[in-house]
Length: 314
Image (tube, rainbow, N blue to C red; front, side, top):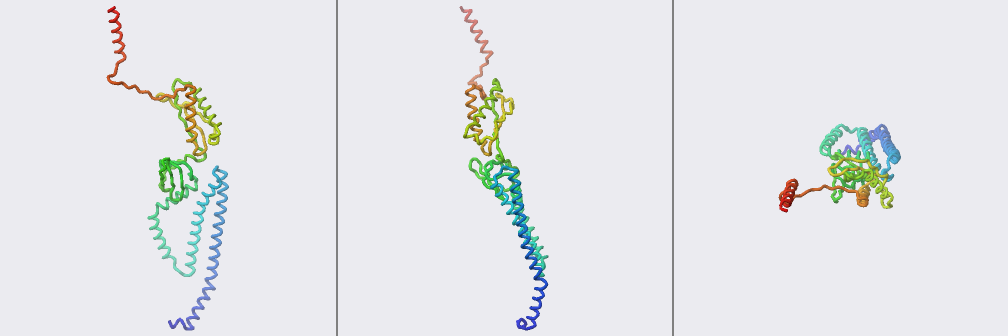
């Protein structure tokens, strides 16, 4: 302790401090300035990229500007954090090197810890990467009706790790993004209701298809449904020969999520129109025998024999 208060100690300390200030401090100051410039440049580039992507995506899709901006804000926030972490890690490594701290053990320890975390959290990393690309590619959005891994419902929430789906019964399904194998979006851009209408074999198909077309036009003219329907009904024609019916296929394009409302109302009006024009909608018939089955030929022969006996008796 006595050496600390000697003149030689303070002289050596001040000389080393002056040498460090002269040789190392300017490099550290320059390093800090470069760090600030790198952070500002990265933020500027990310903001410019976001604006360009918003303009391009708005022009290429019918998605509302607010939805595009929200999705890109989520993605660019992830990119911004990732770039910032990378810049700070580089800065810390160079700074430690400048103050003569050996970073090799630090790097080795970080590598071992990262490897352990990687093995333990590989599913989490996969979920985040898959969620990032789901948002980037705009596969589904909040409010869409989708089928995920065979389960259908309304998309209530999309996050980087999970997607939340609520089915018609109110059951909430939560899917890990990394375990999603298939996504079927039923309400992206536009939707459609496909009809398979069966009529009896005796009906005039041209007349039936005209009635179907007229009903669809009446539906389009209705103020309650006009805004839901995008195009006139497409009637593809005779689709198949059923056991008891001729099946005519048609389709009505609607706004997203409106296909079920339009489909129910169209079927109701078509049934009324078929009843009005006496168009038969066939249904399966079944014959049931009560007790012993009767042979029609045997019954005819017995009746003929009884008639013959009655004539001979006369």
